Length: 302
Image (tube, rainbow, N blue to C red; front, top):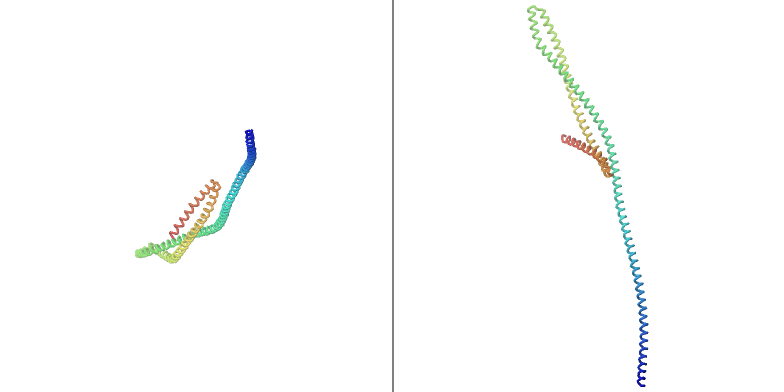
């Protein structure tokens, strides 16, 4: 009986302990359940956080893409703006260059127009001087021919006088001899011949005296014509030299204008026109070199 009581007591203690253990287990279970609930909440929170993080990362990537796109857009705008600015500068420079070229062309045409007027005036002056030189040459030749004619007549007169002076004494002797021989027929012939010689001598002396003044006058006129011809020749040379200078200026302007036209044709890839203009340019340059060489030679001789 006592043993049963002890067992019952022990059983009671065991039951009490089991009750306590059950309470503890229940309490632990509650805690476990609470922890599990908390874990689930944490896991749910973690899932939500992960979802939010992925969403944020996705949004961040989108934002980065937008930022990069905006950066590229701004860079594109900046590049476009820079290119537009550079293009504007180039366009402005080209416009200024074209305006300068247009102004230069107008200046060259104006200068060429004035030069043509000068060339026309110089050509008229040169032609006038050539006509004067030709007329002077004809006048000089006429005066020289008059001088030669007067000199020839004077020489002829001197020859007549000389022949008479040589022949008259002989005729006088022959006449005296004929008279002495009473050959009056021959004496009359010799007397008549002597009279003719005397008359011819007197005429020749008169002609010679007259021609002396004429020869002096002709020589003076020839000398005057020679001086005039020399002066006109010098004026003509100066006028022709001035004409070559004007032609040299004309060629300089022509070369400038042809060069500009050739470069413009080449720039627009119109190579046929450029080649044709190049040929014209080479001809003009060669002619200009010849004129410059001629002018330099004239200056050296001067």
